[in-house]
Length: 457
Ligand SMILES: Cc1ncc(COP(=O)(O)O)c(C=O)c1O
Image: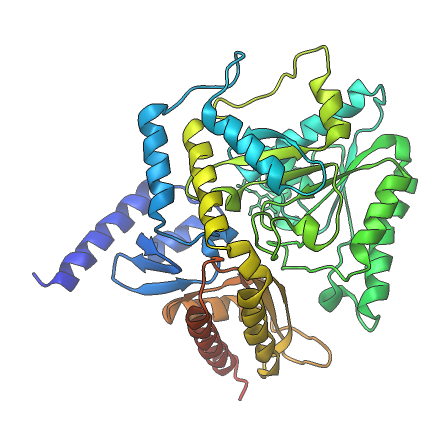
């Protein structure tokens, strides 16, 4: 049997097992079963390899998370060492472990301002769920028991647990589980290209931020616990707010004594060119959630960071905090996070993302705005978006162009995500200039093929 035939049989076998027994996240299962899942078997640097031998450049760093790139031996070895020394113990019964203690201290040196205390969980959703519980506990301890409602934004993505999905503002995330839960509400989001019409971005940013004040006044500040937001909205379409937006949000939160929680699950760990998006956008949050890039996805780990206002109250409470996961501060995940941060520091990945590599990437991205079907490109650090439009003047969409483009990318060896007709990039921060050239070469090819598929000459 030839090697190709052996691979094909093996692939088929995995696809059959998978189709019969594996419920995938965010998938229409009968469609996947008919098509057969692509089996990713290994990865190195910025490249993924499938079971049929195809090499793909991972323009999304997995799910915006493999910041250090694939195949980092130091991270794997740190995990293996921790697995050997202390594969598990919890942090419940007045115990801790060296890895979580060292990681907590390390994070306190990286997070902006005075966010110096950390609670650990396993996913971004759990971190956000935990943050909501912390916020409510904080206000209860303060004797402000009516401050309950959390204001979040349309098209926000904060995860999938009942609370995280209630925080999220992507409409398709709600009806299947009868969400949002009571106590969550959503305001407009600062998507200038899609919603700004003819206004200038600065005016639009201010206007959208002021929707927060209007909502606080409508609900009564005594009933509002927090505003919850990503510095750059990721899964909701890579929305980079105009520069007037965040200062106005900050002013409004302070004025009405509404806590500001920033979800750094995507923006954290260098993605926008600083360790945290809050630094890039000059935000001073009361609390922050982080996940993904903390371990570059090598292990599941997330955290909620709190500043002194919340931290002092929570730490000085007389009653026990009734919250915590079996795997909070898991030694192996924390060891992996420490090694990942070491690699990122040693290779200056954050500085490069905020400097020459990020600039090079943004330069290549902006060249695509000349493409016949691209209406706008936008980006920051190693985040980039392209709006596919039928008409550059009116910003009219095709409606189905994103999926077509994504499929052309896949067929030609590039992973680029489609959010509606917006194409999104978020490659590993370890990407080099030649790899950026390759990525954009493939992106142009996919866009040309998309234009052809859509009948644009
Ligand atoms: C900003 C943001 N918050 C939270 C989450 C949820 O994280 P997880 O999928 O680890 O639960 C995500 C996932 O993409 C995210 O992008």
